[in-house]
Amino acid sequence: MPQHQQSRMADTHFHDAKLIWDYHQMGHTPRPCSAAVGLGSHDLGVATTAAGLYRVGLFPLVVFSGGNSPTTRARFPRGEAVHYREHALSLGMPDEAILVEPKAANTGQNIAFSREMLAEVGVEVQSLLLISKPYMERRSYATCRKLWPEAEIVCASEPLELDDYIKSIGDERLVVDMLVGDLQRVIEYPKLGFAVEQDVPGDVRDAYGRLVHAGFDSRLVAL
Image (cartoon, rainbow, N blue to C red; front, side, top):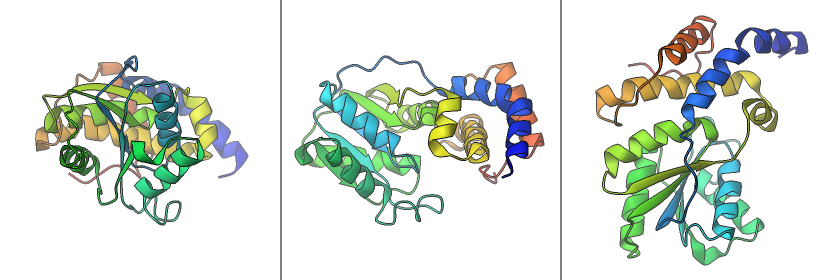
């Protein structure tokens, strides 16, 4: 995208994107949990965050969960969870603290398959540290509350502001499209039984509508 087009998009839509970005984050304070799940995506920051939280003693075992998707296949050809594991190992996380769940193709499967894997190895999960991209905290929380209601959920992500996250990914439009797509899922998935309902403030809904109208819609799902 040409530089002048990037600047125009930022000037016009950054405020709306920031409203949605802030809404997606749960604001939890990370604390010690029975186990952790690192949700697969295009973002190695999930694995970086997991390694850091392990290093300070917040969990004994993490499940990295995720296979391939159209948006990650080129970046992570061996699967999201496999690449997460390799990255965490490179940061000093011990292999015995990592489980790899390589089949999940969506967030519901991330949660369900990780739950099965932890049960298989005898981990009793009373609290779960759910590690995701920053703008996926709320959706992953809502999904986990639906599928694993007895576990206390603590959300965590790489501590970045929106502008810094855009720089780390290197694609402003993709990031805003992702923010919009995740908000659609937060709004619509409870009606389909995929997640618990979350209150969405009016200003966040208005920002969502403006960004969709402006064409930030590549990550919307047909309902």
